[in-house]
Image 1 (cartoon, rainbow, N blue to C red):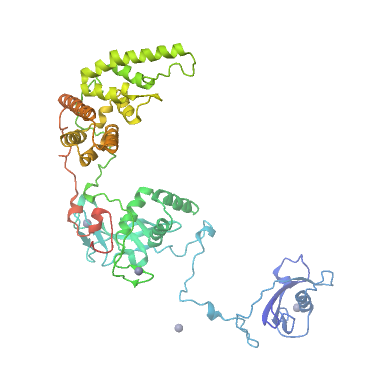
Image 2: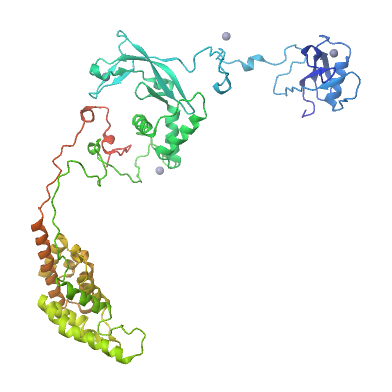
Length: 532
Ligand SMILES: [Zn+2]
Ligand SMILES: [Zn+2]
Ligand SMILES: [Zn+2]
Ligand SMILES: [Zn+2]
């Protein structure tokens, strides 16, 4: 094979015929030398170097690629085991290769992989290590927030636990000691701290290898990986293995991983490609959504959930929350505007002048005889403003009736069939009051919450430098009407609503007392350096 001049050992298995099955009919021909065929040939049936036997002839022929199946009394089966020159070649020694190179510190026989073991094969040693033993570092995370440590003079017990690795879980034994600190009825145990053998002991019955937990850190930090999909992936990986202990559920893994990650010492190990390790200043960039630790408890639920003990606040609806109280007239005004005001589009494309004229007259009649008087009863300013901006004042010699959009929008909102009053919150009313007392540009900004009115006032300020008196009058009417509705609403309902804030927030004593809780765990944000 291969390179010229390579020294190698070839072993040929040779028999008289290809049908030969018995091992006794096969001999081994050994060749030490170059691929060209130079060197020494040995036949196992002679067991010494000697004259060419037929086996050697056949092997030589096979090596030269001229093996002839028709040749008398010989068939060759070449099993060509080539030791290339990376192996030490001993031309004269009987040693064929160095056994030393394959000797390790480990020397005890090892079980084959479980997937290729037969069911009845004896496991001549328990795998993996049979027992995780207690040491001085073993402890119980006591219910009171403290920690009890292993006492070698007290009795211990042996229990079963599961060790979850990257590919499968093992059921092994763990040594435990009843905790003298925790209440007896809680049956808490001091358990081993197997950090040094790469294990994380969650609760003495569920242990995880550090590799597995690091795998998740790698997964979510290299590509966003939520818990559940990752747990799913590992679960599938486990399903490939037999015997099958399923992987843990997402909820348990969540708890385990957080219990693990809070022990990792991330602090003080910042590095920058330009400044080197431990740079003096670090700019943090990121989004953290923190939720105060003291608010996290078992009762945490979405704000939409109605609690059983939620107080029932009887709430009475208030009718007539529209700006303009008379439903019939309101509707008439709205339709009048929607239909085109003094330039009604009832006839559509119709050329029928008579029909058009009739609609025009009707709309003018409604305006003069119904809308103006009615608006006047509500507020003279309302009538005046409407007249100036949307009534006859909106008539232009060339275009006919063409009001400005800003006023049209305001009156469409004022005449709407729904509670457009909703924009008049308590703060909007207060701001409107402030503005009317002193109608400055600064105070106008407080009316952004009432966009239709704000737009009109802004328009007037921009075009004329001041506000029209009827516009201010209408704003005043809106303030009065808004207050009226607000007061009626509050008269029907309690104010303020009885709060539920008096409920105690349950904080367990562990969270309060334990010195093991890092300060960052209280907020959920871990920064490696103190706040500036
Ligand atoms: Zn022979
Ligand atoms: Zn030695
Ligand atoms: Zn304890
Ligand atoms: Zn830097």
